[in-house]
Length: 306
Picture 1 (tube, rainbow, N blue to C red):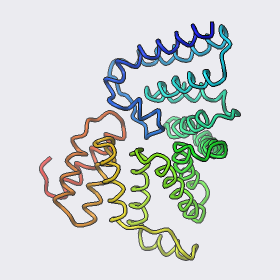
Picture 2: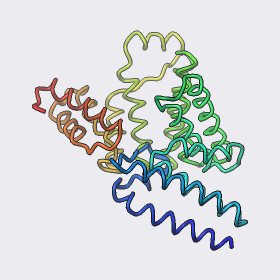
Picture 3: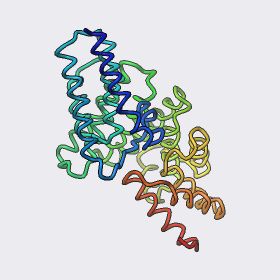
Picture 4: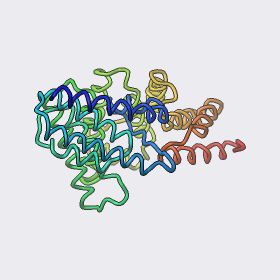
């Protein structure tokens, strides 16, 4: 019975993934590695996606009732379902699925739950008090995943991301202090998985953020810390270019920041090249729309016809 249940679930998942993967490129395999969200926008097919996601959860519940399986098999099945729901943008259903493993000991489920909690916190309809609770929940889940497995690259990545969110509630001193920790976890994630383009991109964002820090914030940081965090646009460029080398055209925001960084470095020709690529990137998500708008506006300031 256990083998039949497992075979049913896997074949069902594979059948559903095939058409969805075609419409979203590499997003499913990337989501499974904990990468930045690539939400599907299937116009006119929202009901189908919702129904399929519902079936994913129901099939798991059916299996729990009708088969007794080995724990490792169940974990693999849950991870498959979690990655499928994540790729469909079904944040609330994903959070519901993973919430039953909140007190578990599997780091792969915990970092996925941390990611889901963070995504739920950033949905516009989430009330402020719930958002704050989810932000701290996501940090704690990622931290627990790391305690269980220090060699888990996605756990390092998502701990860094979630820790950055916590800084919004704890003041400038904590936020700056956490920036060292965030940097270290991003770097460790890259060491463990040098082919993860999104973590490399995140290190580029870290460098870019401190390179463009206003002078008054730099003074505040210097007053609070003997050696405040700092970086340069040249360092940021290294990471953005490396991310693009690892996975070309993987993320609209990386293209945008390549353009913005070259603009900061006074290289107008290359800035225009990357901003055009960001502007022309296929729009799939709300973030892609924002990137398109920002790239278009910057190109206008550079005298480009758009």
